[in-house]
Length: 566
Image (cartoon, rainbow, N blue to C red; front, side, top):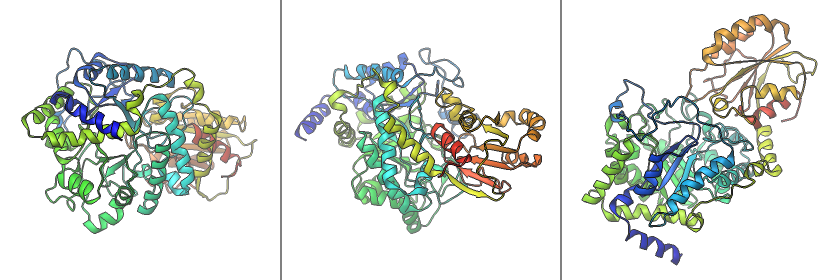
């Protein structure tokens, strides 16, 4: 402890306001290649961390044209920034190749005049809620699937196992687990990302997840404080106000934070970009609300870990503030780290505004040092000051397939399968039955699209059970063409299996298409990643909820369809 305090005290006396501002910022590393802008920020601006998005070639903004506040995120391009199409997918890489990239950037940070390791962060909630799934990585069911089991030992093992895989790649900090209590079944943003609509179950499961992450040496982050489970809108693209009585809101939504903060098991918390009138009568957005961040989280709940924002160019925040002003107000409210994923000049604006606020005294040196102590203390406790975060990449791709790790993923996928209904009693299938798979291509499958996770996985796994399986896939835009093929082949099969996926980024999935499959007079079995009416039509008689449409989940479903026990 003396070495940590001595190191932190020395660093506080050496850094300039510009360097301290950089240490309070986490910038997006988008794609699978480095670029001069990112390296410049590491070398010369002393940024504290990188937010990893390997499946996004370039990130510009959440707000579409015409949105309120869009003028606050539009900037002319810099000659030095990545001037390419952000809609294309970046080059696909293996675990070892991505680890090499992170090692190269870490070495740049480690070679700065003052040794302060950067951290790497990304979203991890489940398989479908992960920003990177290289071959071999577990594709865990969504939190709601695990929460439904309420097997805390299994949850602990799941997150410890995937945490070891992430740590081996060089990922230190995950934005998860979600502790939103999903009390609104039509919540478009939270849904199965939540462990449960019950606050006590969410608390139990989150505690087990935190324990698993810590066992793996991963810094975990509870989100989205103080709770978005009652929302009816998505804060990524707009601003929502959650108007509830304070006592009821505490009982239903703040409860996990109250308990877990009191237990001192929470390394980090992420506020929501939402308004909570019962907690801050001024109507300020939580991310920049001092009553919500300092008054409740810091002082009332006694939390002294890292508070990190979500991406600062989301939704309604930009309708009210410029990026620079939002960043300064977040630090003033009590936040420690501000996150900016954008690949453009907004990063320079945010850094300059923050550095100017520190230099001018608008944000006091004492206040800045409080945040730096918290950030560096956690980095020290999780070993980053010892090795700078460098990982061994030789043999990493093979290590991703450790048999013991695979067993954890297989067990979780098998046990969460939920047969919601099977009115005609068509299950299990017989091997001689002719089955047609009508498969929804998910966003995650398109991102990965390697031998480990790709469209047609369910067909591939069902062929392991029977040769009498045919296949067609669909997306929203291809449904007319898919229907033409279905009209020609569906009458020749005995049963139809269709997958349906709810994705908060693509919420327009067509329930009417799923229902229309009944026109062929064949039994229709829906395999869904979500149990809610968001995607499951009442008209479908047989519904299996797998809580994942990725590798482990689909293999478990294929076996379940042919008679394997849950």
